[in-house]
Image (cartoon, rainbow, N blue to C red):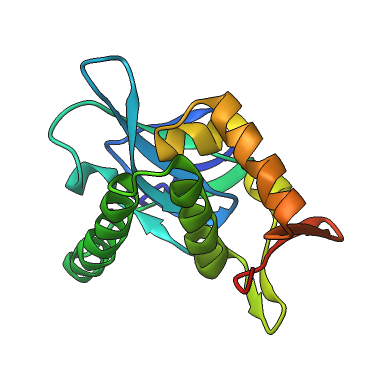
Length: 179
């Protein structure tokens, strides 16, 4: 019997089964765990070309959700895929954990944006170009990733623009590191 691979197109905010492994053809997904106080913790963010194996990460219920519109394909992960995924995920979790320890909310948000920009954007001599709209980095999504409120994210982004740390560059946002 031929092996069938599930291919899905999802809108932003839709869920993917965490029992399957997914290759992202397009778009971005985020894995979140629910805490006892009904808040969430971001466990990972992946983009085009990434293989996501949620079953290797959690020992309690988690939510794999499309951050932006996505196109994914189910993949049977090999032992090597699993080894590579776990190594990369440990590095990602370490980074996300370090962000959670930054006390000032604005600093935590800016560090997350820089990390996302280096990972999914374009680095140039002017700074880091990141598509907030392409990744669907709404104020609400950024708040969930940083453990902040949506209002605090909005105020911080306004301040970043006033200070010149973020500037519109076409359809993208330019993060300036020299400010």
